[in-house]
Amino acid sequence: MANQTKPILPLLVNKKPLELIKPSKHTPSETLSLSTLDNDLFNEVMYATIYVFKANEKNQNDPVPLLRKALSELLVYYYPLSGKLMRRESDRKLQLVFGGEGVPFEVATAALNLSSLNYIENLDDQVALRLVPDIEIDYDSNISYHPLALQVTKFACGGFTIGTALTHAVCDGFGVAQIIHALTELAAGKSEPTVKPVWQRERLVGQFDDEAAKMPGGHITSLLATSPYIPASEMKAKKTAYDKGYLEEELKNTERLMRDDAKFEGVSDGLLFLTDWRNIGWFGSMDFGWNEPVNLRPLTEQKSAVHIGMILKPSQLDPSMEGGVKVIMTLPRVAMVDFKREMDAMNKLYS
Image (cartoon, rainbow, N blue to C red; front, top):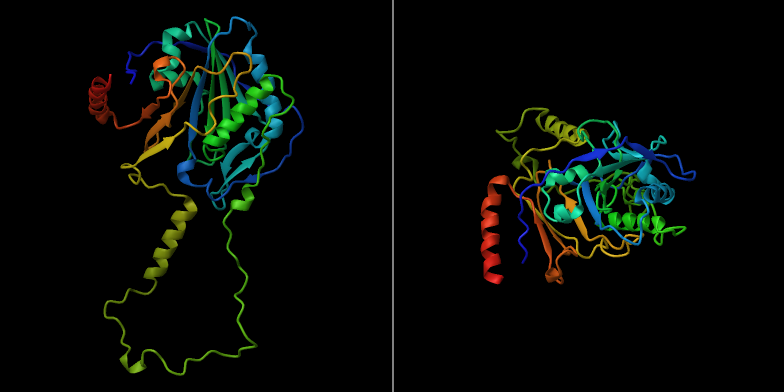
């Protein structure tokens, strides 16, 4: 088991002005509703991922123009990603609206070699965030935001990273893998992606059936129970009955909380979310001239109250890790000292 604890290294990134990449062809201009599952509060978070590509001596091309063009072509098929996500004022449900904005695309440079950062294998999260797009989102407001953003960072060695930020409300891990594979396919020169998306979220929106219940038999003029279950003589008013309007007011409060999409503090403080990303399609089929990425680094939502444990395939940097796994844990800062001590002790037992 490899020990990946190293000191934090400085990383100065020079970012160029932000671009907005639009679809290369006309796309539908409509408002798209998301499914009931997508509207889960725990899904409305941005997940960032960094793909690390080594320099290729046989390929001296600049990856930026290829990726810029590929992204524009990708948005013809994945046009919902070119919209902006917001909640309706009426019911606080998520929807994608289209105003011709496009997807944020940033280009950056760093005067370091990727090898000096160990290909970001153990780079501190706060430092690694410089390799992904800057996105500030106020989930409690009604301000719309981009569901997808990309940043390409070129290093002095000729290698580069692709940093993506994508909301979980629009796509899960399989969806992210499908998008990045389609992007690299188009960057490699394919005319269209192998897998084309289908948007049918409206089929997964919970709806109430307002149709009146059908009564069996013919026309019924009245319903009457001739033998009451509780004789009137045995029925008495409760001495502790609630005041008039008490239950009605509480129901109104509950309805108001649901309508306002209220968030409860402390509900998820004791949760540890475990997820296995080894078989969701993120690995392989991403070579568009610089071989497969040598490393893949997910970054967890910094403000999330849920502690996350991720299981991934190891990077291609250490041959001894072939067949092993890489585990990323997010725990309270005070717990990390004990966690590291336990992991170091286990390393000594099995090394």
